[in-house]
Length: 191
Image (cartoon, rainbow, N blue to C red; front, side, top):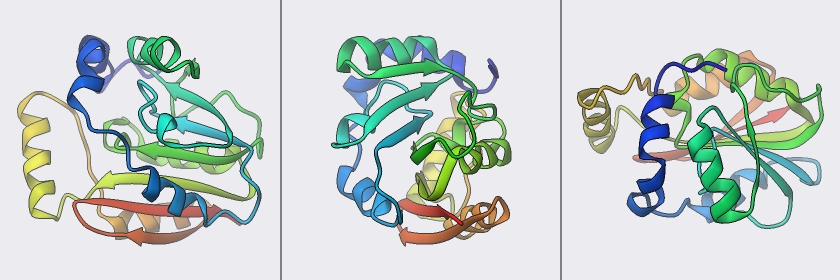
C-alpha cells in the first residue's frame, strides 16, 4: 500500500468525514455508468473511503477499495459495504474481472494517477466503464480548493477534464467528458 500522500490525513479525520461531506452525486455517477457497453454487475469504488459514493449507487455488487483502513472501517460498519485495503496503483483483482470502476473526489489524493488509471483499465472487462468525478483546478472554485488543500498540507494534484480524458486514452480507454464545472465527470470505456 502506498501509505503516503493523504492517507494519514484520512485515517485521522475518518470519524468526522461523513458529517462534513455532502452525499455523492448519484445521478452524475449513474449517467457516467450508462456509457458502459456491458451490464454492470461488479463495481469497484477505488479511493472510496467511507463508502459515500457506493451508497449513492444501486444495483451492482460493489467493493470499496481504499488505502485508509479507518475510512474503510466506516464503509464496512457504517454502511455494510464490502471493503478492501489496497493501493489504487496495484489493485488485487484479475485482468478484465470487473464491469465498472468509480473514483469519486479521490483521484487528486492518489500519489500516482497514471498507475491508478492503468490498473483500473486493466481490471475492467471490455465495454466496462471507469467513471471519475473530480474537481476542475481551472474553475474559480477549483482554484480555491487547490489552495485550501495545499494550505492544510495535502499532497493533492488536480487535473482538468481534458487532461484526464487524454490520460484515459493513453491507457486504452475511450474517453468521454460527460459534464463540466467545478465538479466534473470523465468516463473511459474499455476498448
